[in-house]
Amino acid sequence: MTAALEVRGLAFAYPDGHPALSGVDLTVEPGERVALLGPNGAGKTTLVLHLNGIHLPATGEVRVTGLPVAKAALKEIRRRVGVVFQDPDDQLFMPTVRDDVAFGPANLGLRGPELDRRVQAALAAVGMEDVAGRPPHHLSFGQRRRVAVATVLAMEPDVLVLDEPSSNLDPAGRRELADVLRSLDLTMLMVTHDLPYALELCPRAVVMDGGAIVADGPTAELLADRELMAAHRLELPFGFDPRVVAGGGSSPA
Amino acid sequence: MGAGHAATSLHVDANSPLHRLPPQCKVAATALFVIAVVATPREAWWAFVLDLALLVGLAALARVPLGVVARRLVLEAPFLAFAVLLPLVAGGPRVDVGPVSLSESGLWGAWNILAKGTLGAFAAVLLVSTTELASILRGLERLHVPRAFTTVAGFMVRYADVVSGELSRMSVARRSRGHDPRWLWQARAVAASAGALFVRSYERGERVYLAMVSRAYDGAMPVLHDDAAPPGAWAAALAPAAVAAALAAIAWSLR
Image (tube, rainbow over all chains, first blue to last red; front, top):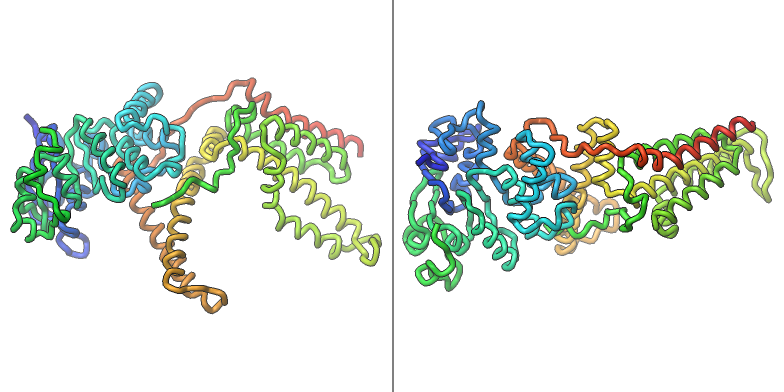
């Protein structure tokens, strides 16, 4: 089976020479939900921007369901990999929710009834059909985050990449988003500092530090490894024991 | 990101025939109405009275209260201040009103600005009260206004709340640290905030662009709406503008 995401020997340095990625290897199988953990500055966002070709691999290789990320295939790569950015105000820029959700598929050339169907389906998937005609800035933060997910779902991606999906959400909004994400039958890569959220949603986790992947395994095991956690500035919330929680909230992939 | 519910929305919620007209018809009709009013000779005061009666009737039809219209007309106050000066400073034959001597042509000039400005503003208020901003932009697009313009205007509408929210948070943070500007020389911190706000908005622009490119944006905004208006809608929307144009024509022919 072709891997949903395949990253081989990926290295990247910013124009000022500062290295951000130094040889990343990562394979994500179709249908997997993987948490990407690591301290600030570990290179997580840089890796994400390589997955949809915002940065093209200078050294190494990135493949999305077999298709190499390269200039010629950018449109198809961006259809296959949907990125939900951290601040929904960055993602929602059109005058109405409907127009915003239509933006991606319209860029792929869809028009008319097929475009409407995509918009409907994407909004239904996140439970936001009722707000289609409203301007994004009239929505609550949690609603905006869910609409941001819909804007990407409308492109019918193979892989959903989420940057800090639970940040700034109140506990109810956080839970509602988790329900939405669990209901999607998609390969998912979730960048997060919210370790309980990672444990709840992602059976597998990958830890990045210093531009490389330093650990890869079942989320519950990684979070229970105190030495690993301490070495990479990862901290569990007070009183949170992953061994007790594991299996309780998460469903198998 | 607490952009609250938009206080900036001028839309008056109602389901009237005016609300239901396609936006491109209303935008075009408003523009033509204003042109017709401007083209009316200033001496034909009766034509302006009829134009006003027409607008009052439309406001009633749209269920936009006249009080709301009056409050929004305050917007034209700075222009009227200029009009008030005209009779005092213009030359030509003068008339004495009590102790002040006023220029006759200045009085006509002031009346001209007052009447046409108020009617034009009234028409614009009716447009924004019955049409969502997003629809107005769509109407402009339909009328072949360049997409670069409508896109930029759309971003402005979308981010006005976000940017003003950031501004008010910065202001709260400043005042929370004891800043209480009363004099001009205390404006330094405010100016620094304005600079920071500019940089933040610029960075947001970069992030928005990144999000757009990630959704396969390639430099051209996709056309999402192509809903033509039926001839009936055009006829209904243009009727008031046609009446105003007829009044202008009659006024010219009577001179």
